[in-house]
Length: 359
Image (tube, rainbow, N blue to C red; front, side, top):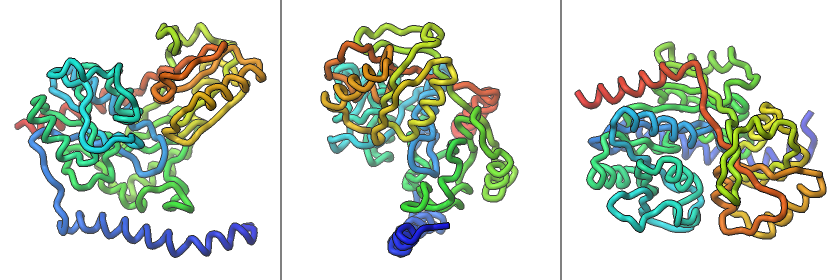
């Protein structure tokens, strides 16, 4: 039973939420009816995005796709808006024409944490940060000769045409409570599913209602859209002070304090427990939180009080911890590896998409 304060709050927020939903529906309808037309690039565009707020594993999937296509000798660039960065305009990482454009020397405040993380893990792939993805794509084509562009968090970026629209669904929060904010976590109404050319369920090793998920996908997408299941696991830990990387099995039985500012922190904790590491304390911040020395000192004190052997965070958070002074408890970043029985299906889909566009 909904208590009176919550019921009143819902009544007060209902009208603004429906106005927001109407605005989203009208924008989508404008593109569906060709009132607004998406711009097309010469390169093949592969978009990765999701329907819900928060982390669904978009950045790891972008990394996976870009690395694979690069291994197949395609000229790849990644387009991203650089969420939460403090700069404006276009920025380029991994520009081979500019030796000074070294990813290791850059700040997340200029580029955003996710672009900088991608740039360091994919040093031979340009990362172009711009809110205007068409403009970024033209730069990639003209400057780097890119023949494939991977669009990070692009599902709602309707102004750019794409050749493959990949929708990620997080198994731990499949459809965001079936409502848009503030009552749910959907970025757009559920019928947005029908724009997907392929659906990937991430964190698919977790318990979820697979039958319901499949039924909803089929209702909106039909039977022709492939549905694949992926998950990731922690394979190694990187010591932030030294940069040394150790196999995760070396830490089985250790007591860790977990600290992070990501979209789905509980998923990280579950990943940690699955590899045999104990969690003695947790400190969660909002997604993309800009850590201060005070934050890190508080995390360290809490870890000591809980009897932690070390502190564990993510590679994305590690970007935002740079420049701070670590205490006397070591800090590690968890390194994840994507796994799936559907890898061959996804790779085949990617290559078929490239082949169709290049004919």
